[in-house]
Amino acid sequence: MHNNGIKALKGMGLAHQALRQDELRNLKGDIGIGHVRYSTMGASNLDHAQPVVMSTNYGDIALAHNGEIVNADHLRDELKKKGWAFATSSDSEIIIRLLANDISNTGDPARSIRNVMSLLNGSYSMTLMVDNRVFAIRDPYGMRPLCVGRTKEGYAAASESVVFDTLGGEFMRDVEPGELVELLPGEVKSIKTGLAKGRAHCMFEWVYIARADSCLDGRLVYDVRRKIGQRLAIEQPVEADVIVPVPDSGRSHSMGYAEKIGIPYSEGLMKNRYVERTFIMPDQTDRSTGVMLKLNPLKSVIKDKRIVLVDDSIVRGTTMRQIVQLVRNAGAKEVHVRVGSPPIRAPCYFGIDMKTRDQFAATGRTVEEIAKMLTADSLGYISIEGLVDAIGLNANDLCLGCLNGEYPLPVEGEKVRFQKKLDSFA
Ligand code: AMP
Image (cartoon, rainbow, N blue to C red; front, side, top):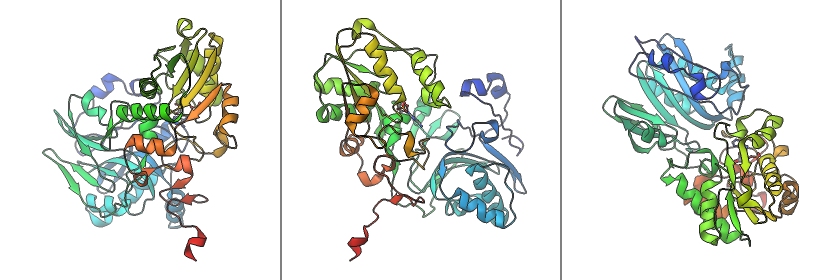
């Protein structure tokens, strides 16, 4: 932000490819927001890159959003009926337009942000710049993570606490569900919205998405993953010679598994660190070749051994099937698969790109049938109870929608959690 004008820089690719150092250095100003897109809706192109900036009577406003608004289509249709036009299919455009419109009525950014929050259903952690001020908001269930911390230059908000370690700063606290904070030069001011509804933190953040060294809602991700591994060893033991983690996503889970079961842990799959996470690759063919490029088996660890492969989760099963084959080709005597999350069976509507039931390995298959599809000698998943215990929060404070098909918010055609059966009203 400079002279009340917002300068936006956007690019495609990973952050270091999209934003050049010299361009970043040329940005002048005291405040800013940034975004790395993980696309769940809309095409993967520059039009959907964030932050979204809009020029209004009230000056430029900008917004960066992590999450998904489930009533976006409804809101867009309603606004179109009133004559509003939209340039993109993104839910972020709806939010910024609603905000621009509301501020022109109230003249009070904080009040308008609250007003807009009250219209949105879904998951959102957001940072906003309005009138030389920076705000951060978290949805009323706290589905996606958001925290605040301090750095040498001032206060900041981020999805993961690890940002503050990296910047030589200090993590302060999580933003509460339904909370609006303003980052001021001398303080983080909390503004009550009265919108908090309870909690429904996404379990997949601890299982896979967040960095292991981040602390989310009071739980260090690394600790949770190790506990998941330990619990998995109790629930799904197996006789074997060596535990091999699937790098990098299964590393901490494997460590916990090996510790508990007392079988040696060994890095039997070496990762080419210059190949990126396979799920980001847009189509299935790319994903399959990606696995081969990414991992190389160490024959000395694997040959003639009974191997347990431990990974965080199985979504489509593409990756695990390839890895089982890789390990077999390297001479393994047996290949057992253990998984740090229960079977993913239902779509996510709140920010993870798992949209249709037909893509899941677990759809319409028993565990034995999934094992067969993976060409594994055995397969074992952690239970939902085991996962919840390992996270250490109450099950009602988590969103487990992709595991049990019950969601914290109404989604068309899906069950809402705590929904009573008809006969319970008798
Ligand atoms: P899959 O081959 O689909 O079973 O997935 C293999 C790995 O990618 C696992 O570590 C998953 O947690 C991760 N993964 C799969 N799909 C997604 C997704 N849509 N978003 C994030 N991670 C994913």
